[in-house]
Length: 183
Image (cartoon, rainbow, N blue to C red; front, side, top):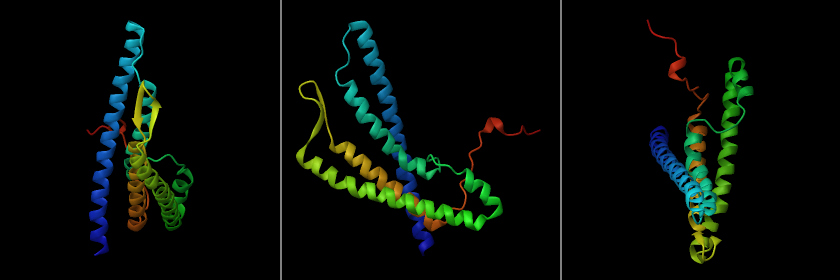
């Protein structure tokens, strides 16, 4: 029973992580367009696009936390696995246990961040606080706080699923052009 619940929850979490990553990628593309428009406006019209600085600040946080869960899902979160990779051949059970501990601690940290950020999101939603320069360009704070809370919560769920499923060793990604040619 637990296996089927874990599998179902894993599918939902993976789908959400992939969707959030896709939205983050679209945010990167939008940011590139905005920056190019700003550069052209500065060069051709000697007038920058209003709010570019604020949009960049806003977008960077959005992109990081939208893509965080998918990075966790595919085991590409920046960390040093060198020691665990060396240890795996000699002591696979110890390595598996250490990976589970690391994933559990990571889940705790993600849960703490989500726990702290959600009340901040609610506060910003109620007060409608904003950042930027009034009269020039402003954006509300609440979307940033919501994305941070949800991105960390989803990352926490994925870390917990890794602990429960006892994922032993992440699969290394092989680039097809480095594979041996088939003859």
